[in-house]
Length: 471
Image 1 (cartoon, rainbow, N blue to C red):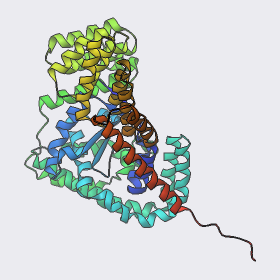
Image 2 (image 1 turned 180 degrees about the horizontal axis):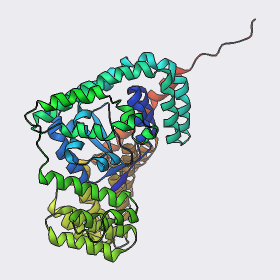
Image 3 (image 1 turned 180 degrees about the vertical axis):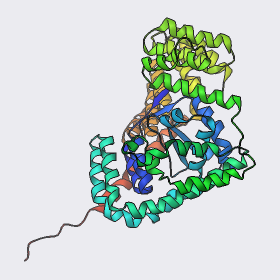
Image 4 (image 1 turned 135 degrees about the vertical axis):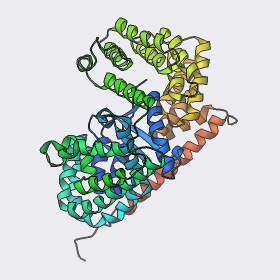
């Protein structure tokens, strides 16, 4: 189920700007103006591609978060806290899994090389000259013009660009070497990264290069490509290709993204009826759904289920199509089929809970609560799941628990003022013996501490008034 997640908070966007290197933060400002996408199938595929690379770099995969940004531009970047952001455009532009994995290995190199942390110091002298101009960009972002703000910030680089990019190029060359090492350690070729660079090398010198923000944040040069090519030429893994299974998953991931993110007519053009591949039918099922052609959408997805009955994601898509077409109760069976085939997927648990809530049956409400609680064990900060849990508690007449779940929802979103308010209201009605009361108490304490800290910083930052009068 491809769904749009909450946009990244503005505060986080501004923090990224202040802590990341000059070139990377411009990419972050643009990407964070977009929303995040959630989908179990795509996330699983990205994990399968990424986790061996992370382990090769000495990282614990469970400590590295991967985010899919809903943005058609070609881009990827990392931030502090070991976070990798991949634009949907990057996945769609990658010709094969090896190219995508090469970029992921490069971004992993930025993490293991400590480039984000080092850029705090390497770019400090460049900041002074550019912050005045960058302030205009931040003002534009605050006003809601994220794209315009990012462009202004990008323009402000002229005040510190030479020093900042000189430092960045060192990092980029180092990340290339790390990428090669990690791909080599996992028994894979690094040719995909070279192909990726060469495919878009010309964009660096063309006026329309703005279409590819990746190369603004990752300055490319012929010397870098040549150095990487020398390494690849001597590798014993050069010439190795992606497995048929990897290629299939990559194409299915692309087909689903195209179905949801591109217009139906473009999808029909890319995947005409004469194309009866799984990828084509997958994309067309979504396009038909978006065109409100429910009959044809179900026909396409049923053909996929008949062909591969063990695939949970075909049932998941059928459930989503039915649910979002107003057939909530009809969506229960395929949602259950999806979860039966992948019982540890929190997004599938949430989808089934949503469907169960449509019956307004007491037993289904109870099952929805069980599913949502199970999903929150995997993803305790899933604000959407907390919202649904609040809804089902309210439907059951459990108003105190609904207030508590709402407090958790706001806390997960970073709205600590609202979180504190609902947690306090929940405390008034909940028995002190319940774990929810203790958790509500924790939210109140944490929220008040954070608010007091922010208030203290604000007051500490104020300059004392200077009197212009004399006695």
